[in-house]
Amino acid sequence: MTKFLFLIKRGFNFFSTNISLNLASILTTTTILFVFHIFFTMSVSLDSFFSELTNIQSIRLYLKTEDTKKIDEFMKKIQKLETVKEVKYYSPAETLKYLRKNTNNINYLNNIPAEYFPHFIEAKIKEEYKNLENIRELEETLNDYDIVDVASYGEKWIVNFTTLNYSMKFFLFILTALLAAALSTILYNTIKINLYRYIDEIKIYSLVGASRTFIILPILISVMIESTISYLAATGLSFGAFYLLNEKLLYNIGIYLIELPDIFMLLIIFAVLLCVSILAGLISIKTFLNNMGAINE
Image (tube, rainbow, N blue to C red; front, side, top):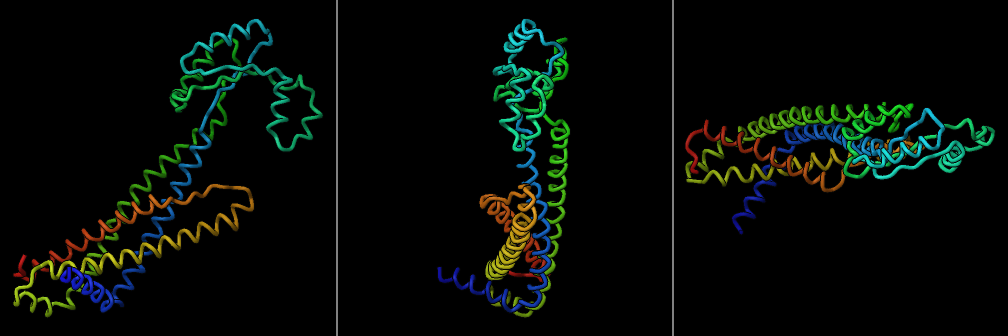
């Protein structure tokens, strides 16, 4: 335990004695992580936003006829469909009543006669069939009936716009890979430069029979300190930026788009960052020591 604490102390000393070079590395790493946080937060927000928009509960069927007998027969048919939970018919008067109940500014509705409103059937979808593939299949099936003028499940441009969400996720995946490679390269080179400053000291350790762990562990602790500082700085900056965007701009115009990642996601990102940092550090140290020659395993 005493030996381990000694190595941890050496790690802090290694970080502090190379603070000038480490600060440059921290600033660069913070910038990389800040860019990642921006795109990651946008991806999370878009995913949540489109999930709400595409949470389709029912399909509306606007009809070509007002014959109540035909409408009743048609409702019995679609009630038997596997994907349909229940059906309900709205007369023009009921449509007007529905709009008055669900619209904030209803003054203009009072001047429109009820007969000008459409009549339609609302077919509610079973929970297990609420994915877009099943909904589109149901829409095609319902449109095939002669009695149906239009089958609609909402603003299709919104549903089709969800492809942007998938594109954003793919872009984030590519960006993450590139930023991880850039981060690894920065840490690799920073550690190697720091090691060259201690080359004489490392040679002395080699002569007295010091193990590689004695050299490697303090440097890895230094890398973890650097990564932690960079991550906290980047997270704080991105959260501050999005908080101001939410509170000072979007909130005032009634848009609630930005959703910040929860603590669980932040911890996962931090764990991945530490793994990447430690891996880059190990490769850099081992490459340097192998080029130097004999250091005990």
